[in-house]
Length: 430
Ligand code: GDP
Ligand code: IMO
Ligand code: MG
Image: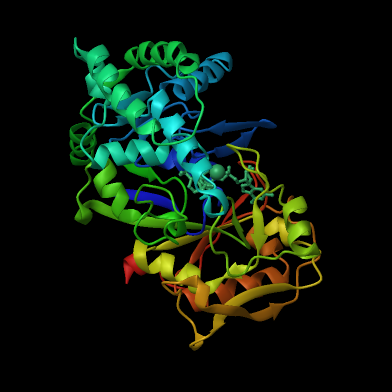
């Protein structure tokens, strides 16, 4: 079998958690491949909203195995908190979660280094979630990191102390006050919690299961435009959020990737610093934020809002080899006086219709305007009930993006999800 991948095409928060939860019954295994507690994946059912950070979004379904892959970075403190809240809901996690030995650990000192580094940046702050992501991936590529497999070794404490001492020396370079001790007790409690789970060679497990004919959905975190290589560097996260990240972050060979689900909102949002060509710093942006409840699931920060950006989406689709599109939050735009979609940018170098290396060259986005749908979409359950304006919007997007929109989401709840058969052939079946 092949592994399917679901990933964000924008700057994160596209609705990945909800979509993975909805798709989970079609799969045997759900696996996270990168990122860590910077992610906040929300899903809703039975009128309760759940937010997951490290644990895959398949955890609420009964029959699926969930895997935290080698590409993920784990903060034992956050992990234990997540486990505690799942335990309160009586979710059977023990038998449904596997953790890769090769996943790296976020130490208390990584979090402090993240905070010290951001504080030193002044007005050029990345807007990090301050979860220690950057410093942990730096130690991974710098070959200094601690991995989940290390917690099983008798000299784990020494390894921890040695890395923490290095970090203390680094912290000496910053004018930054910190208290490491306040995190350490909880961190070691978290390590005990991790030890209660099956710690495995997840790449072997995954490939063995694929061979047996089992189906896998790889769940991305963040979004393509936050990718370390292709995002608006340095305003990015520190991992490969693109489809290739599923190969390195789970040990799945490229020729074993099947469908690639690219998820996007009917508009755009971004949280943190960095370029955002279609950002609306006006009442319309405020209205999108209010109607879409655009506040971060991890940090609670207000998300920056703007119109859909086609050059950016085309760039993301190209990098990921997207075979099917999932559009979320169509309900949010109901009743707007009009909806705009950016199809090109006016730049200091002329009009361009591709996503540029330096967004600083963009003078203004060029928009195509659409009539908005008036109807409340949240109770709609079939494509037949779609207002004409919504259909026109989707068909326009499909034509431009050359990939079928196969799912439309009209609310945060599981049920508010509509499968759509497109006239456009799936790229994978061409
Ligand atoms: P993720 O990080 O990609 O999983 O997305 P987040 O959970 O951070 O943010 C998406 C937010 O939108 C969450 O609050 C979801 O409950 C909500 N959501 C998802 N799909 C829809 C939708 O179609 N309509 C509305 N109104 N909300 C949605
Ligand atoms: P999910 O998986 C939205 C953003 C941060 C910041 C930049 C770097 O929920 O879509 P980091 O903490 O990684 O050093 O932050 O990336 N960011 C996200 N934005 N959704 C996320 O995850 C994000 N994870 C990180 O706001 O701009
Ligand atoms: Mg999120």
